[in-house]
Length: 640
Image (cartoon, rainbow, N blue to C red):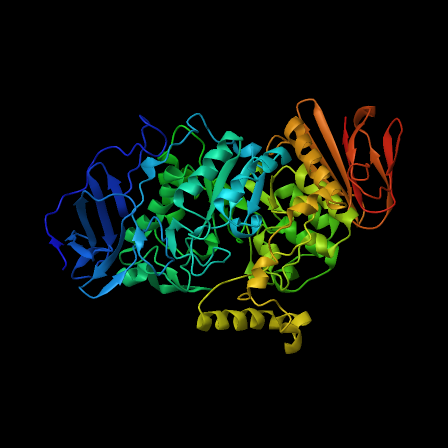
């Protein structure tokens, strides 16, 4: 027998203090979903066209239903006294469908199961003195929780955090953890944006990860997806069709409605999600996936509102927003008063693309826009990105804007990331395509550049495992995903034959997922151990030499020396560092010395700790120049 509760209480206005410790003042209070209060639980859901909404508690003794009250704008609210954490519930719409909460804090039985009431205030944080990591000190390490360890959980990731701290990393970037259908996924098919994936552990397990990271001096960033919902288990649109735009399209279908009818409620849903991760999980920042696919023609863009709300909500620690956006728009990191969008940083693909083309000569897809010459690579290093308004063949029009005035630490650059590895047919990494000496040279260039570096899990020891695209959808959807994945590669010459495409790993096959797990024992074996020592040493050099920190070089410059080598200069105060990088082949290079200064060799990639089969680089210093002979690719770091 169902009990229908019809007494309503408006939400409490009490301060929400659980996020950053007792007595802290937080300029944000959660509203959507099930919010635990002192004497019960507030519920709120947005369903503007519903005639009735009930909370249905699922108990062994039988379900109980409680009606919610309708408010202007389509919000439904109510307070259930005596309710405690752990209760399972769904919302019933119009007395018919029972669905999970679009703002569910946890889905213990998966995305199609009931939602669970979670009390974030019950977690005992110990990071009260944590203030975050400054932008110029960020060194990112991107990881996928499911494949980072054999267990693939938040708890097992905690056990590897001391290794990351010893490596010299300052910020862990988690690929999306919002719950997704099945037991394995990249995370970009997330559908429960507030619920940490149940296969990785509980919400408190994720809190433990962040708390432990902060004690080791590691910031934690979370990748979030605000440009689409996953294809299976996204129940928010069942509560309101206005989550999607009727005017705008993206590669995933109808765009998220950021500028049409009811868009303020849609925007608020995503902004509350961002605030939730920052405050209830103490995340230090967010990486916003594919912001070019957030189509918004409103007078005040969603990204501006999001940034201003997040930054205003926190004043005792640094909160940083990084956008992934292929448009190369400098105004995205400028303040609102200057017409900017207030992002704190941008992923910059152009450095990676130039290097890929330089090493491989591959020019298909978006690589068609890049020459891979050392001249263009040097220009990319000089500016932060290459395309600053030139015509793009791939995008069939001008791409980018002038980044002059954008400080270097706002650009995030990389040799690898989940996209640039996993979107390849076989998930092969850069070091699977080039020789070890070239990889060491590229590593030094990445870590000595004036921009914020990002590493992808395992690259620091040249992991032997690939990182493939994998899913765990239902049989019908899974078949379509597998077919679509293989059709996608038909436009590339290497896969023009359908028989070749059949060799592309099946995303649905568990072996594709299992084969993408990094193997930790590798980093103790050669040549992996030598590569790891190189990463540790160059990161340490970057952190200790003032000329090599992000954003500290007022007059860095990069110039091509030959069609296979370039010079990067970094300077801060009395410290000047020269990085000479031979990316391909062999050469004898002459570097003019500034004012007859004596040069100190800080390291070379052919030093015995870094090369299992060293081919020493000959270095002869004269009064006005220094002569470097490379018998193969490599790098030398010099200091005047």
